[in-house]
Length: 239
Ligand code: NJP
Image 1 (cartoon, rainbow, N blue to C red):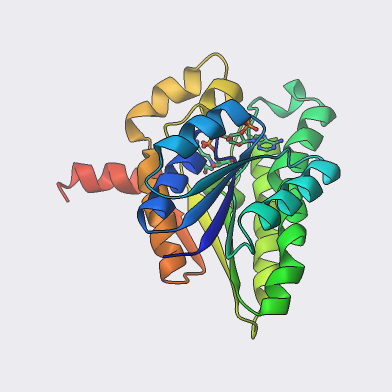
Image 2 (spheres, rainbow, N blue to C red):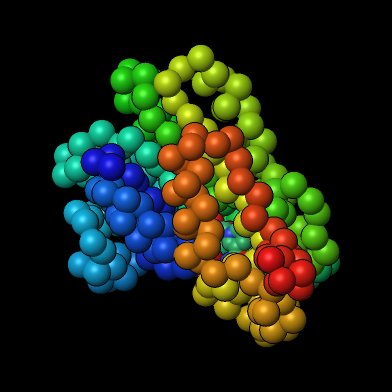
């Protein structure tokens, strides 16, 4: 309550749902992504104060400008949710090295850039919370998703190392690791829709991921694994 929560990738899917969950808990949210029209439209629908700030996580200049604008308009960031990400699925032989680099640039280095933008202020105030939407695929491999899985493994390597580095400070670090979530993500990851069609009924809702993330922040949890099949299993056994 009363915290400033900046969320990257807030123009769609899980990030937009997280904005709602944090706003409902009394936070002031800073919505960050490249699609400013979507951010503005979301900002007016939220129940509390919200700012829309343009951010491209692949650009050092954009990251610097976006966090300077955030500091000026909203103040110090208490919680940074690094959620921007994308996937392109395909067999290793069908993917270019450029595809691998593009996923590393957004999913891993994008989070590193944004973390570095807020960390000096958090260290100086000795308080803050860094949250990352990684993935179950940050922990296991996946056929036809090697570039995406590798980028999320890199992200979790960074997150787990940073948690050790920040031990003893007032800064908490949380990883959220969902399975498949029903968002526009699969339109880009898998344009033919074959994978999404197969797993659609097992998918998590973005609101479920968002509520779990908000609760994890309240409880300062280290990480939350949300495999979609756990929900499917719960349904199967009538839980
Ligand atoms: O995807 P989608 P999700 N700079 O496509 C933004 C992870 N995840 O909500 O810039 C700044 O609806 C983009 O904004 P825009 C996944 O890896 C998902 O499902 O306007 N922002 C949009 O707001 C990702 O890390 C599943 O295009 C950039 C957002 O990212 C996170 O969840 C499973 C950007 C993507 O929204 C949210 O994904 C899992 C850039 N350069 C993990 N590039 C799943 N859906 O199944 C993209 O385990 N964005």
